[in-house]
Length: 239
Ligand code: APR
Image 1 (cartoon, rainbow, N blue to C red):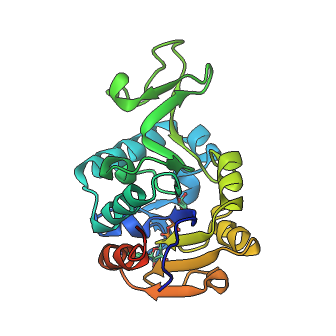
Image 2 (image 1 turned 90 degrees about the vertical axis):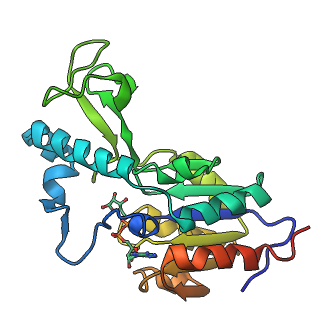
């Protein structure tokens, strides 16, 4: 496997697969449903307008499940990698479960939002779920009284941190994709962007992702089993 050099800058993209071993279900498990719900019903702005109570119930359940889960050796291996190259590490996650943050990752962006937060559809003020009254079926903004919505980037909405993500990918020399099916854009295009500027590309996944043609090194298997050894091997020549 590729051995990191002193000047390498590592960019990583993770998806639902890295949290699978923490017991959180991935999105595309064959039935096209997310925890028994159609994606259109619970992960689109139209779904929220149609049935905000159902959407809130769904995300409160996802939040509770995420709080019950623990980071696994895959998340922890990325924390170890960052500790070895603190100024040359950038982690982009599509996951909303907060497990990378809880594991201890620092230079991290959550491009699809966070289960732990929400914002007001009127005044746009953000809150942690711990700061608001979650008892009503439709929680209200403590600042202006209007409806709150989960701080999740739904289909048809612009992912967060895109300027920072694209600028950082432009300077990376190694790009690693972990546990993502390559179905959802723009995340699915990041590896191609990295490849264009000559970065080494590596994928760790249970199966070949849709965009696997951009991968120079494909490692098939579970993130929690592969990443600890991979990080050790890749950092073996660092001082
Ligand atoms: N280790 C590595 N890969 C795994 C593991 C594992 N233990 N378990 C599953 N996988 C792989 C699957 O084979 C699949 O290719 O992880 C991938 C998960 O794919 P998806 O369920 O499509 O999740 P993701 O790519 O993160 O979805 C992207 O789509 O629904 C939206 O916004 C949501 O962020 C999400 C986005």
